[in-house]
Image (cartoon, rainbow, N blue to C red; front, side, top):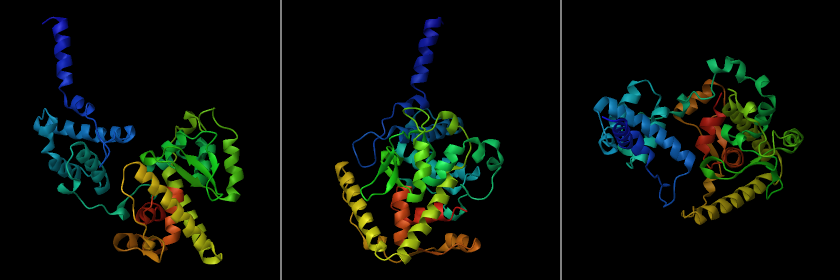
Amino acid sequence: MSKRNKSSASKKKKAGSLAYQIKKLELRRKGKDKPMLAKTEQQYKKHALKFAEYCKSTYRCKTLEECKSHIQDYANYLTASGKTASTTHTYLASICRVFDIPLSDIKKPIRVVAHNTRSRGRKAVDERKDAGRKVSPRLYDFASIVGIRRNEYLHLASDDLVVDDFGNWCVRVKKGKGGKQQLQRILPEELKAVKAIFDHPADESHLFSKVEMENKIDLHHLRALRAQKMYKYYLERICSEAGYRERLISEIKYTWEQDDLKRIDNGYRPKRWKDCKINGNYVLRGHNRELAQKHGLPVSYDRLALLAVSIYHLAHWRHDVTVANYLLAI
Protein backbone atom coordinates (compact mmCIF):
# COMPACT_ATOMS: atom_id res chain seq x y z
CA MET A 1 0.00 0.00 0.00
CA SER A 2 1.34 3.44 -0.91
CA LYS A 3 1.99 6.13 1.68
CA ARG A 4 -0.94 8.14 0.31
CA ASN A 5 -3.31 5.17 0.66
CA LYS A 6 -2.03 4.44 4.17
CA SER A 7 -2.58 8.07 5.16
CA SER A 8 -6.09 8.04 3.69
CA ALA A 9 -6.93 4.81 5.48
CA SER A 10 -5.58 6.22 8.75
CA LYS A 11 -7.71 9.37 8.44
CA LYS A 12 -10.79 7.29 7.62
CA LYS A 13 -10.18 5.13 10.67
CA LYS A 14 -9.71 8.19 12.87
CA ALA A 15 -12.90 9.77 11.51
CA GLY A 16 -14.83 6.67 12.51
CA SER A 17 -13.33 6.33 15.99
CA LEU A 18 -15.40 6.69 19.14
CA ALA A 19 -13.33 9.71 20.15
CA TYR A 20 -14.12 11.40 16.84
CA GLN A 21 -17.83 10.58 17.17
CA ILE A 22 -17.92 12.18 20.63
CA LYS A 23 -15.97 15.21 19.45
CA LYS A 24 -18.48 15.86 16.63
CA LEU A 25 -21.50 15.80 18.95
CA GLU A 26 -23.26 19.15 19.42
CA LEU A 27 -24.65 19.22 22.93
CA ARG A 28 -27.52 21.55 23.79
CA ARG A 29 -28.54 23.12 27.06
CA LYS A 30 -31.14 21.14 28.94
CA GLY A 31 -34.64 22.12 27.87
CA LYS A 32 -33.35 24.82 25.50
CA ASP A 33 -32.33 25.06 21.88
CA LYS A 34 -29.01 26.69 22.72
CA PRO A 35 -25.46 25.30 22.64
CA MET A 36 -24.10 24.04 25.94
CA LEU A 37 -21.46 26.20 27.58
CA ALA A 38 -18.04 25.27 26.17
CA LYS A 39 -16.51 24.36 29.52
CA THR A 40 -19.50 22.22 30.52
CA GLU A 41 -19.48 20.46 27.14
CA GLN A 42 -15.76 19.76 27.48
CA GLN A 43 -16.29 18.19 30.91
CA TYR A 44 -19.21 16.05 29.74
CA LYS A 45 -17.33 14.80 26.70
CA LYS A 46 -14.27 13.97 28.81
CA HIS A 47 -16.33 11.57 30.93
CA ALA A 48 -18.11 10.23 27.86
CA LEU A 49 -14.75 9.48 26.23
CA LYS A 50 -13.58 7.47 29.24
CA PHE A 51 -16.82 5.50 29.06
CA ALA A 52 -16.39 4.92 25.32
CA GLU A 53 -12.84 3.66 25.85
CA TYR A 54 -14.19 1.23 28.46
CA CYS A 55 -16.82 0.00 25.99
CA LYS A 56 -14.25 -0.41 23.23
CA SER A 57 -11.84 -2.45 25.35
CA THR A 58 -14.51 -4.49 27.15
CA TYR A 59 -17.19 -5.01 24.51
CA ARG A 60 -15.38 -4.01 21.29
CA CYS A 61 -17.94 -1.30 20.60
CA LYS A 62 -17.38 0.73 17.43
CA THR A 63 -20.28 3.19 17.60
CA LEU A 64 -21.82 5.34 20.30
CA GLU A 65 -25.11 3.55 19.77
CA GLU A 66 -23.42 0.27 20.72
CA CYS A 67 -21.92 1.92 23.81
CA LYS A 68 -25.30 3.21 24.97
CA SER A 69 -26.49 -0.20 26.16
CA HIS A 70 -23.50 -0.55 28.50
CA ILE A 71 -23.98 2.51 30.72
CA GLN A 72 -25.32 0.36 33.56
CA ASP A 73 -22.35 -1.98 33.19
CA TYR A 74 -20.03 1.02 33.47
CA ALA A 75 -21.86 2.23 36.58
CA ASN A 76 -21.29 -1.19 38.16
CA TYR A 77 -17.65 -1.10 37.05
CA LEU A 78 -17.06 2.32 38.65
CA THR A 79 -18.51 1.12 41.96
CA ALA A 80 -16.49 -2.11 41.86
CA SER A 81 -13.36 -0.05 41.11
CA GLY A 82 -13.75 1.80 44.40
CA LYS A 83 -15.12 5.10 43.08
CA THR A 84 -17.15 6.99 45.66
CA ALA A 85 -20.88 7.42 45.20
CA SER A 86 -20.32 11.13 44.51
CA THR A 87 -17.68 10.50 41.83
CA THR A 88 -19.77 7.77 40.21
CA HIS A 89 -22.77 10.11 40.10
CA THR A 90 -20.68 12.89 38.51
CA TYR A 91 -19.38 10.58 35.78
CA LEU A 92 -22.79 9.09 35.04
CA ALA A 93 -24.55 12.48 34.98
CA SER A 94 -22.20 13.60 32.20
CA ILE A 95 -22.50 10.34 30.26
CA CYS A 96 -26.29 10.31 30.44
CA ARG A 97 -26.46 13.88 29.14
CA VAL A 98 -24.19 13.02 26.21
CA PHE A 99 -26.18 9.88 25.38
CA ASP A 100 -29.52 11.59 26.10
CA ILE A 101 -30.93 9.10 28.59
CA PRO A 102 -32.43 9.82 32.04
CA LEU A 103 -29.91 9.47 34.86
CA SER A 104 -32.71 7.97 36.94
CA ASP A 105 -32.73 4.93 34.63
CA ILE A 106 -29.28 3.92 35.88
CA LYS A 107 -28.86 2.10 39.19
CA LYS A 108 -26.10 3.71 41.23
CA PRO A 109 -24.99 4.07 44.84
CA ILE A 110 -26.77 6.73 46.88
CA ARG A 111 -24.69 9.83 47.52
CA VAL A 112 -24.26 10.69 51.20
CA VAL A 113 -22.85 14.19 51.53
CA ALA A 114 -21.53 13.43 55.01
CA HIS A 115 -19.17 10.93 53.35
CA ASN A 116 -17.72 13.60 51.06
CA THR A 117 -14.01 14.01 51.80
CA ARG A 118 -13.34 17.18 49.81
CA SER A 119 -11.60 19.81 51.98
CA ARG A 120 -12.22 17.72 55.10
CA GLY A 121 -9.43 16.56 57.37
CA ARG A 122 -5.72 16.45 56.56
CA LYS A 123 -4.60 14.95 53.25
CA ALA A 124 -1.22 14.17 51.70
CA VAL A 125 -1.56 17.16 49.37
CA ASP A 126 -1.80 19.49 52.37
CA GLU A 127 1.80 18.64 53.30
CA ARG A 128 3.18 19.72 49.92
CA LYS A 129 5.33 22.83 49.77
CA ASP A 130 3.06 24.36 47.12
CA ALA A 131 -0.08 23.94 49.26
CA GLY A 132 0.57 26.57 51.94
CA ARG A 133 0.22 30.33 52.12
CA LYS A 134 3.92 30.97 51.43
CA VAL A 135 3.67 29.77 47.84
CA SER A 136 1.17 32.52 46.91
CA PRO A 137 0.41 34.88 49.82
CA ARG A 138 -1.57 37.44 47.76
CA LEU A 139 -3.88 34.75 46.44
CA TYR A 140 -4.19 33.01 49.82
CA ASP A 141 -5.11 36.18 51.71
CA PHE A 142 -7.50 37.35 49.00
CA ALA A 143 -9.18 33.92 48.81
CA SER A 144 -9.63 33.89 52.58
CA ILE A 145 -11.73 37.05 52.25
CA VAL A 146 -13.51 36.52 48.93
CA GLY A 147 -13.99 32.75 48.71
CA ILE A 148 -14.70 32.11 45.03
CA ARG A 149 -13.84 29.11 42.83
CA ARG A 150 -10.27 28.55 41.63
CA ASN A 151 -10.99 29.15 37.93
CA GLU A 152 -12.81 32.40 38.81
CA TYR A 153 -9.63 33.95 40.26
CA LEU A 154 -7.99 33.44 36.87
CA HIS A 155 -10.43 35.81 35.18
CA LEU A 156 -10.58 38.63 37.73
CA ALA A 157 -9.45 42.01 36.41
CA SER A 158 -8.63 45.35 38.04
CA ASP A 159 -12.16 46.68 37.38
CA ASP A 160 -13.93 43.90 39.28
CA LEU A 161 -14.20 45.67 42.63
CA VAL A 162 -17.71 47.15 42.52
CA VAL A 163 -20.65 48.29 44.65
CA ASP A 164 -23.99 46.44 44.39
CA ASP A 165 -27.53 47.87 44.38
CA PHE A 166 -27.59 47.85 48.19
CA GLY A 167 -24.31 49.71 48.70
CA ASN A 168 -22.23 46.65 49.53
CA TRP A 169 -18.68 46.37 48.21
CA CYS A 170 -18.34 43.25 46.08
CA VAL A 171 -15.84 41.34 43.99
CA ARG A 172 -17.46 40.79 40.61
CA VAL A 173 -17.14 37.41 38.93
CA LYS A 174 -18.13 38.23 35.36
CA LYS A 175 -18.64 34.64 34.31
CA GLY A 176 -19.00 32.16 37.15
CA LYS A 177 -20.51 28.69 37.28
CA GLY A 178 -23.11 28.23 34.54
CA GLY A 179 -21.90 31.42 32.85
CA LYS A 180 -23.63 33.59 35.46
CA GLN A 181 -22.32 36.83 36.93
CA GLN A 182 -21.79 36.81 40.69
CA LEU A 183 -21.27 39.74 43.06
CA GLN A 184 -19.30 38.33 45.98
CA ARG A 185 -19.88 40.49 49.05
CA ILE A 186 -17.06 41.64 51.30
CA LEU A 187 -17.33 43.32 54.70
CA PRO A 188 -16.47 47.01 55.25
CA GLU A 189 -13.52 46.11 57.49
CA GLU A 190 -12.11 43.90 54.71
CA LEU A 191 -12.22 46.59 52.01
CA LYS A 192 -8.74 47.97 52.67
CA ALA A 193 -7.08 44.56 52.23
CA VAL A 194 -9.09 43.79 49.10
CA LYS A 195 -8.35 47.21 47.56
CA ALA A 196 -4.64 46.64 48.15
CA ILE A 197 -4.83 43.59 45.87
CA PHE A 198 -6.83 45.42 43.20
CA ASP A 199 -4.40 48.35 43.27
CA HIS A 200 -1.59 46.03 42.15
CA PRO A 201 -2.94 43.65 39.45
CA ALA A 202 -0.63 41.18 37.75
CA ASP A 203 -1.30 42.92 34.41
CA GLU A 204 -3.97 44.97 32.64
CA SER A 205 -6.26 41.98 32.17
CA HIS A 206 -5.58 39.79 35.21
CA LEU A 207 -5.57 40.37 38.95
CA PHE A 208 -3.43 37.27 39.50
CA SER A 209 -0.63 35.92 37.34
CA LYS A 210 -0.41 32.33 36.09
CA VAL A 211 2.55 31.79 38.42
CA GLU A 212 0.44 32.85 41.42
CA MET A 213 -2.23 30.33 40.39
CA GLU A 214 0.15 27.39 39.94
CA ASN A 215 -0.20 25.79 43.37
CA LYS A 216 -2.08 23.20 45.40
CA ILE A 217 -3.63 25.60 47.90
CA ASP A 218 -7.00 24.19 48.95
CA LEU A 219 -9.06 27.15 47.77
CA HIS A 220 -12.27 25.19 48.28
CA HIS A 221 -11.41 24.89 51.97
CA LEU A 222 -10.86 28.67 52.18
CA ARG A 223 -14.22 29.10 50.44
CA ALA A 224 -15.83 26.87 53.08
CA LEU A 225 -14.20 28.82 55.93
CA ARG A 226 -15.52 32.02 54.36
CA ALA A 227 -19.05 30.59 54.22
CA GLN A 228 -18.83 29.57 57.88
CA LYS A 229 -17.66 33.04 58.88
CA MET A 230 -20.42 34.75 56.90
CA TYR A 231 -23.13 32.50 58.37
CA LYS A 232 -22.08 33.61 61.87
CA TYR A 233 -21.99 37.22 60.66
CA TYR A 234 -25.53 37.19 59.26
CA LEU A 235 -26.92 35.23 62.22
CA GLU A 236 -25.44 37.65 64.75
CA ARG A 237 -26.87 40.68 62.96
CA ILE A 238 -30.28 39.03 62.53
CA CYS A 239 -30.43 38.25 66.24
CA SER A 240 -28.99 41.47 67.64
CA GLU A 241 -29.68 44.32 65.21
CA ALA A 242 -33.16 45.82 65.10
CA GLY A 243 -34.61 45.88 61.59
CA TYR A 244 -31.77 43.90 60.00
CA ARG A 245 -33.87 40.80 59.42
CA GLU A 246 -36.45 42.80 57.45
CA ARG A 247 -33.73 44.58 55.49
CA LEU A 248 -32.01 41.32 54.57
CA ILE A 249 -35.32 39.76 53.48
CA SER A 250 -35.96 42.78 51.26
CA GLU A 251 -32.53 42.44 49.63
CA ILE A 252 -32.95 38.70 49.05
CA LYS A 253 -36.41 39.11 47.50
CA TYR A 254 -35.08 41.86 45.21
CA THR A 255 -32.20 39.59 44.16
CA TRP A 256 -34.72 36.79 43.51
CA GLU A 257 -36.79 39.08 41.28
CA GLN A 258 -33.72 40.15 39.31
CA ASP A 259 -32.63 36.53 38.86
CA ASP A 260 -36.14 35.63 37.77
CA LEU A 261 -36.08 38.30 35.06
CA LYS A 262 -32.82 36.81 33.77
CA ARG A 263 -34.36 33.33 33.80
CA ILE A 264 -37.29 34.59 31.72
CA ASP A 265 -34.96 36.40 29.28
CA ASN A 266 -33.06 33.14 28.81
CA GLY A 267 -36.22 31.21 27.97
CA TYR A 268 -36.88 29.61 31.36
CA ARG A 269 -40.14 29.69 33.30
CA PRO A 270 -40.34 32.12 36.23
CA LYS A 271 -40.02 30.55 39.68
CA ARG A 272 -42.53 31.23 42.44
CA TRP A 273 -41.13 32.73 45.62
CA LYS A 274 -41.81 30.76 48.83
CA ASP A 275 -41.49 32.28 52.29
CA CYS A 276 -40.34 28.93 53.65
CA LYS A 277 -36.93 29.81 52.18
CA ILE A 278 -36.40 32.44 54.88
CA ASN A 279 -38.60 31.32 57.79
CA GLY A 280 -37.69 28.95 60.59
CA ASN A 281 -34.70 26.64 60.84
CA TYR A 282 -33.06 24.12 58.53
CA VAL A 283 -32.67 20.99 60.68
CA LEU A 284 -30.10 18.31 59.88
CA ARG A 285 -31.09 14.66 59.69
CA GLY A 286 -29.43 11.31 59.08
CA HIS A 287 -25.71 11.20 58.27
CA ASN A 288 -25.32 14.99 58.24
CA ARG A 289 -26.78 15.23 61.74
CA GLU A 290 -24.40 12.51 62.93
CA LEU A 291 -21.44 14.33 61.36
CA ALA A 292 -22.41 17.63 63.00
CA GLN A 293 -22.85 16.02 66.42
CA LYS A 294 -19.53 14.18 66.10
CA HIS A 295 -17.70 17.49 65.65
CA GLY A 296 -19.77 19.56 68.04
CA LEU A 297 -21.45 21.59 65.31
CA PRO A 298 -25.05 22.89 65.28
CA VAL A 299 -27.76 20.58 63.96
CA SER A 300 -30.14 23.47 63.26
CA TYR A 301 -29.48 26.56 61.10
CA ASP A 302 -31.39 29.80 60.57
CA ARG A 303 -32.85 29.65 57.05
CA LEU A 304 -32.51 33.38 56.38
CA ALA A 305 -28.83 33.50 57.34
CA LEU A 306 -28.23 30.33 55.32
CA LEU A 307 -29.88 31.78 52.23
CA ALA A 308 -27.85 34.99 52.48
CA VAL A 309 -24.64 32.94 52.51
CA SER A 310 -25.89 30.82 49.61
CA ILE A 311 -26.78 33.80 47.40
CA TYR A 312 -24.13 36.38 48.19
CA HIS A 313 -21.15 34.09 48.80
CA LEU A 314 -21.76 30.77 47.05
CA ALA A 315 -23.84 31.79 44.02
CA HIS A 316 -26.82 29.46 44.47
CA TRP A 317 -30.15 29.24 46.34
CA ARG A 318 -29.94 25.89 48.18
CA HIS A 319 -29.80 25.54 51.96
CA ASP A 320 -28.82 21.87 51.79
CA VAL A 321 -25.76 22.47 49.58
CA THR A 322 -24.52 25.30 51.79
CA VAL A 323 -24.78 23.25 54.98
CA ALA A 324 -23.50 19.92 53.68
CA ASN A 325 -20.65 21.14 51.45
CA TYR A 326 -19.50 24.23 53.33
CA LEU A 327 -20.70 24.59 56.92
CA LEU A 328 -19.95 20.93 57.64
CA ALA A 329 -16.61 20.98 55.78
CA ILE A 330 -14.37 20.50 58.81
